[in-house]
Amino acid sequence: MRTIENIDALSELVGQEIGTSSWMDIDQERVNLFADATDDHQWIHVDIERANKESPFGGPVAHGFLTLSLLPPLKADIYKVEGVTTQVNYGLNKVRFIAPVLVGSRVRARITIKSVEPRGEGRYMVCNDITIDIENNDKPACKAEGLTLLIL
Image (cartoon, rainbow, N blue to C red):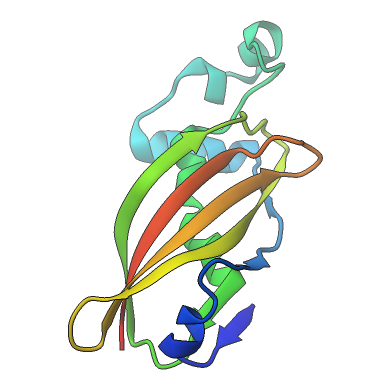
């Protein structure tokens, strides 16, 4: 994980890719737990036998929103800013699910700092351009612009 000394140092990194997370396993247990948490038990995610036979992807796949939900831990593996007391997930500007994540795959994130804007006393809105890669796949799983409010 990269430690950035302060908000000014983060601002100097706008336009730069600042790091890549470690790989994270996407196993069937994770997919099943996500299905339970969200009540999304579509067969393409949780019925292994049927997905192996009928899925256009050749087997069960992770939910797109499961992939998206991994942004906080993947981002935390890439960088932190010293002096920040609180980070608030502020939302997303845009999200695209480009390639399916097959169960048994591994994913990681790459982040480019898109902008750092002051939002009042000791508050900064950071826009991260995030790509979630799938190991051994030319296409990424997801591209998103994530917004985080940093409070000093």
